Image 1 (cartoon, rainbow, N blue to C red):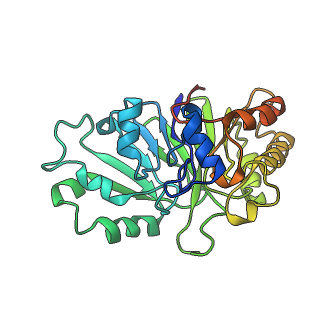
Image 2 (image 1 turned 180 degrees about the vertical axis):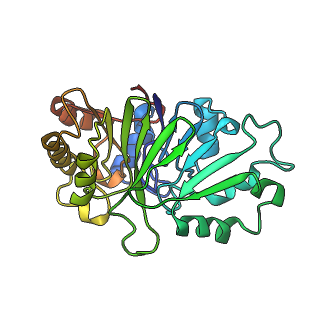
Length: 282
């Protein structure tokens, strides 16, 4: 399984679109791995997690064929993870000769409703009929081509209880990724489920919006210390082992840690730091 981080920032991007704080100014000066766009990840060449407004630029920068995406998983309806109007361009007069004419979209019931509230007036019938929606329920795995994907309840969007946010266990053959964005620390019931089902994870992508800030996870995100705590719990339960790889991802400029500075702290702890365009072979 191949995984490519297309965007690795929180909602504002880094540097923030309307920000001149010292961390955003420094990111502008450094460029490279310190330029972070909104969160999105590509699995192999046919599966994508989330569809932010930066999707078009991701495709240009990282040579992604969006017409080849067959399976789209949406974590939640926040705008930095789901920009419904992008899909209105998928056909009609806007898009021709798609590699995959059909797209299967997986999300919560209310995220699907959000799509039609936002894009319903824009999307053509010929485009809409090629979008196949699959409503997800926590702990109920779905088969998307070669992938078995289990939606797990995230601690996020708690201000809108009906808008269930998910993070995902993604399995292909004997390889697996636990993709934990956006969420605070996983509920004990999630760990109970993974342990009961004897799930062994090859890679964990941890939400690290808060960087080295401590005690922030109740806001629906995590930081490095939360990720360490959760890693230790999963090791103790046998969900992870000495071969599991850990990557921190999804960063806010408010945490004040640019790429190199964060690497200096977390690499000795056995964790890597994502950047836009980072490719991982699992």
